[in-house]
Amino acid sequence: MVTDPVCLRQLDENKSAGRSVFREQTYYFDSDRCREVFERSPEEFAGNVPIVTYGDQGSRFPRKEA
Image 1 (cartoon, rainbow, N blue to C red):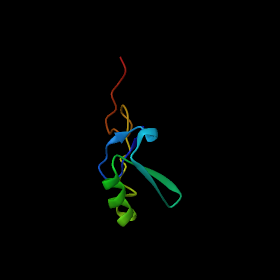
Image 2 (image 1 turned 30 degrees about the horizontal axis):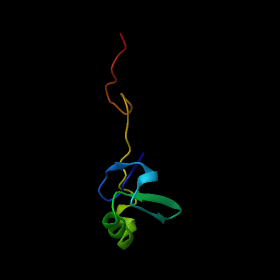
Image 3 (image 1 turned 135 degrees about the horizontal axis):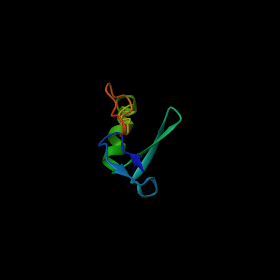
Image 4 (image 1 turned 90 degrees about the vertical axis):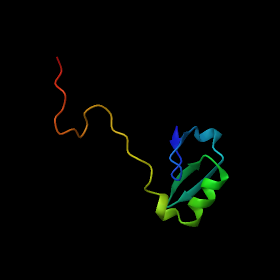
């Protein structure tokens, strides 16, 4: 699974509507419209893919195990 940097939808990279390479990184898109928007100003969207954290990573008060 990959994330479209424009609309932030998750999709299967093999079923994406398009792809684009920017600064040696491949980005996948949910639609041709998202790809077109990205290609007009890729630097605006290239850092848009959120970093997902799981559990208590980065938590100020981590949960204690029982």
